[in-house]
Length: 348
Image (cartoon, rainbow, N blue to C red; front, side, top):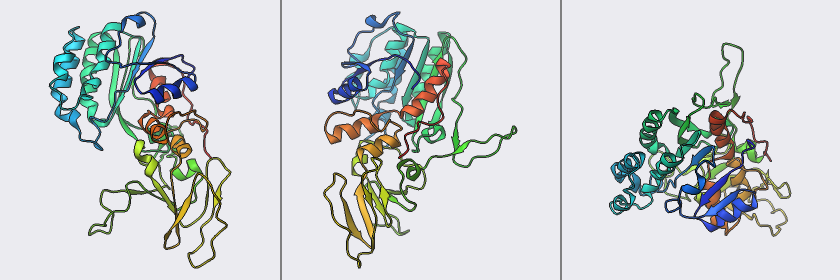
């Protein structure tokens, strides 16, 4: 999106096949075992997005239990001391230490610019990174950003670090707002992009993310497992493959070739056809179907024809694990000076 050439390190074979098919040079390797020497004096910037499973609130959060160990690893690597093997043996979750891995690359390569991304609970770790980077002459900014503020139809909040040795950095300017207001110069940000707008859904669609559960005393399903598609979607994960879209109306899928309209259960059914996106009646005049991979990709701001590879589960994991490309472009724009577009232009 910004016209930059890149080379990636990725462990998952399906994700590597996807990257290759999309034109990205990618080495299948364990980033923690790969040497930094081949990249010395060969790169301009470093983008790092360590696995979030150890830190995510959706998991067991072993990363928080290992936080002191990870901070120690960052400090040691910043001083050129590789103590990872001993520290890894102390970690409750073996993935926790991968959040310290970018420091090994930063210490050895000293790129012109840096962009790091993780779930919000990793913010204290990014602040530690920033202190070392400042000592090395980098301008830094650290904070939590919401992808919806940059045109992504999803409220995905992430801890971000940007740093540069050649320019001053700050948070990327938002392009969208939940409640836009006119500024002193008469300008106004665009409104957040809703899931319905991005996917061409009718008003009133409800998304169930965790299955039907008993309702509490307030009449709501336990776990907060539903949201309205009339606003940005919840943050996607690999589990978005099980999201259910429920509507009393009809909608057209992003491909444009399947259109379904709801009738009351007392009325005759429409002609039933065999499609990959089957719908079913769930009662009370509601129709239900799963979120498709194409829709999940759009909610992450991928192009509609992005060539995902692997099983259906693997493809959804790749969508959910990714930093939304449009969001990433605004972040990388800060350190490169390359303007980012305000929208991706992939609406159904």
